[in-house]
Amino acid sequence: MAPPRVSALAVYMQDKEPQCGVQKNNKGAISKSPQKLLKKKKARSKAHLRNGDAEREAGLCVLHPLTSSSKKKSSAKGGKAAKKINNAKEPPSPRLKGSDSSNKRHVGPPLDTVLQSLGRIQNSKERAKVLFEWLIAPVQPDDFFRCIWEKKPALIRRHNLKYYDGFFSTSEFDRILREDNVQFGVNLDVTSYSNGVRETHNPPGRALPLVVWDYYKNGCSLRLLNPQSFSITVWNTLSVLQELFTSMVGANMYLTPPGTQGFAPHYDDIEAFVVQLEGKKRWRVYSPRNSLEMLPQFSSVNFNDGDLGEPILETILEAGDLLYFPRGFIHQGDCLPDEHSLHITVSSFQRNSWVDLLDKLLPAALQIAADDDVEFRKGLPLDYLDYMGVQNTASFNPRRENFIRKVQELMGKLAEYAPVDAAVDQKAKAFLHDCLPPVLTPAEVDCSVYGAPARWENGDVKECIIQLEKDTPIRFLRGGIARLCSNGEACLLYYTTENSRVYHQEAPKSIEIEAEHVEALEYLLHCYPQYVTVESLPCEDMDVKLAVATMLFEKGLLTTKERLTPLTGSRANY
Image (cartoon, rainbow, N blue to C red; front, side, top):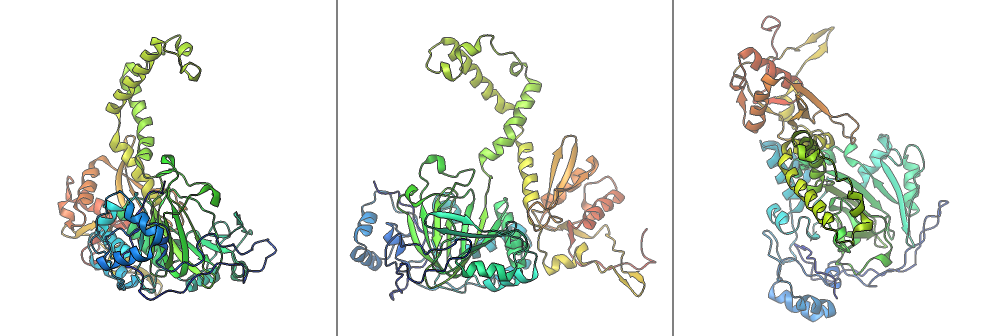
């Protein structure tokens, strides 16, 4: 039986002109290093693979219908693969808005321009949507989440090598090696995959350029585990996108030498967006092998080629292209013989499923039920071990049926005690701890505590007094930077602005909020992105309103509509 069809969203088809063939052989093998790294891999698939033909070779069709002329060409040239597509019984996939069956080159604004333009958007959630729309353009986000997300891989081919220029580059990676303290095993992995063996070659200590580039010249792949810690552009991009996914957004960089492969086939526990930045890489993607591997909670072990069936997608990704695949889809990528590859994988939705919410909810529900309902505290039958357990599964004892019925009854009652909001808050606290801190726009800096002109000058402190007034318009700096959560009897405001760019380098940040101030915090959170005056805060008197607003402003959580003017000593209200 043929493998299930998983549509690949090839937004722009390949050029009509023939592409250079890729002949995999053992010529030009890379020399061995002392670590016994490298022998060139033998060809494992079609000897001649044209860019863009891989989807046809793999028995896939594009998500949108082809034009009539394209259908004829596919029928004429597709051979068995075309027959497999034409004979498939499943209905055609819906055409996505923004998709086009032409081979037109897609041109979009550079990333720097997009990031700068986001500052004109008041709502940070809308900023995230705009940035994601650019990332997957010309596909519309609504269509992506409806038709593709968590369901099947998608290939976006743009025929524009410069589309992702400015995101990251090999030159920037080289600068990072020279200027930053990159540590093997912490920030950088050196890997190889040859003859079915995946190896890691990390020495201890700092990853200095001479050593790193020697590994690369000997055929090793380089994986930068947290480029957001070193690149402001990557940091900015991920910190914006995390408000769309309400889940940590991370990234790894992969630099692969020509003719090599750095990683064994495997599946991940994240939703992956492979952003091709330089060169080319051949990708093969396989369906989950069974239902247990669909949307898994954890990544897989390394597989051998013998563990896999036929790929549902086989393609050559070029600079400017994007490949998405859900968690659970096995994948592997290898470089063509004549060109290196640089890509960044943007990832999200790790352990962000219903089962992860229930993992927090059910223990809390059980504790509440035990406290409130005596039925949960009654003792088990004296003889329940005589008819329950694995050794008694084949017995038809009526006591066994009664026991199972009682368990099901208690499980049904358990839902009545489920503290859903409290469990969601637990997830939210974990998310805010995972978050990157925001990269502030110039306007956000100017109108917040971060732009305050206080300084030491000529032996004295200058302009250190900034005072909010009752008519000062204020709001939270970003929509997703803070959240009110209960912690026993206390109410805490968790926030992200003091997080580190290094994952969990800092402890979770929070402020305990007094009970009489909670309503004011809720008001500010719910009013975002609108500005409200200090006077409008629902507190008992103006002094309390000013105290709450000043506390949040000085913690870097609020911004004002206009830049505040420092007060002179005579005007200051001490």
